Structures are given as structure tokens and as C-alpha cells.
Image (cartoon, rainbow, N blue to C red; front, side):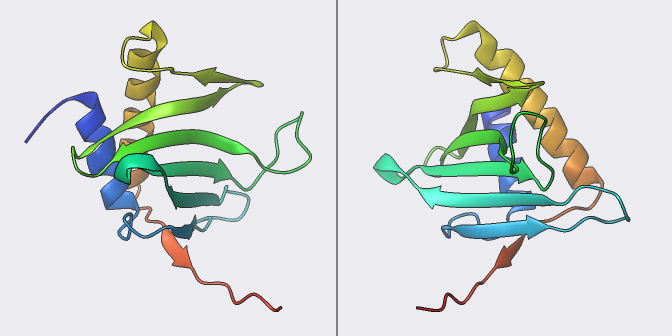
Amino acid sequence: MSSTVQSRLYRSLVELIPQLANSRTHFAPARLAGDIAIHCAVDTAHDGHLTVEIAFDQANDKAKRPSAWICFDVDPSLREARVTRLLEGMNYACASGPADPAAARINLYAANWLTVFTTLGRVFEPIDLAVAI
């Protein structure tokens, strides 16, 4: 089993999102009053990859609605994930690829955050919405 940060990210995402392979929306409710709830959207991308976007239920000062806090490119065949965007303060830090010097810092930060989330016993549950036509 690989112990790279990218494989750690993948394992954490699989643990937090039990149905990761299914493209759908997920939700982790607030555990206490005033705590944040977290939304997660999983979509199919190119070459069998998945995109995962995690957003808090609270808007930042610039946005009128909640925006993605952290975004991942997930490769299920390699069992790896990497951060593509991370909201830091009011701006996005973007990791353009493995050679990007910021990528190591951003991926490690995300891996640690996902580990804390898992340690707290949080799990994303799928949301099934009926849409009226």
C-alpha cells in the first residue's frame, strides 16, 4: 500500500465518502448548533477520474452563496487524489500539477484536514433529490 500524500488523500476520501465511485451530492450535517455543515459533490471527469468538491454551508465575505472550499482530482485506478483548488482566506490556491511547488503544501494541508474530519467521526451521506419537471 502506497504511503504518499496522494494515496493518503484517496484513502481519506473513500472513508469519508463511502459511495465515492457514484457521481452524486453528499452531505455531512452539523453535529452541534452553530457548527458548519459540509456539502460534497462528486462528478465523473475524463479518463475515469472523479472530481470532488467540498463546500461549507456558510458563504464567505465575497460570495453571496457558499463556494467550493477544496476541490480534488481523484484517480480511482491509481488510488490517488490531489488537490486542484483550495480556498485560503479570500483567494484560491491552485495546484497545477505534481511539479507545482505549492502542490505539496496544499495536498498535505488537505490530507491533515480530512484526517481530522475522519477522527471526529464525520461521514458524508448521499443526498437523493427528486426533481419536479
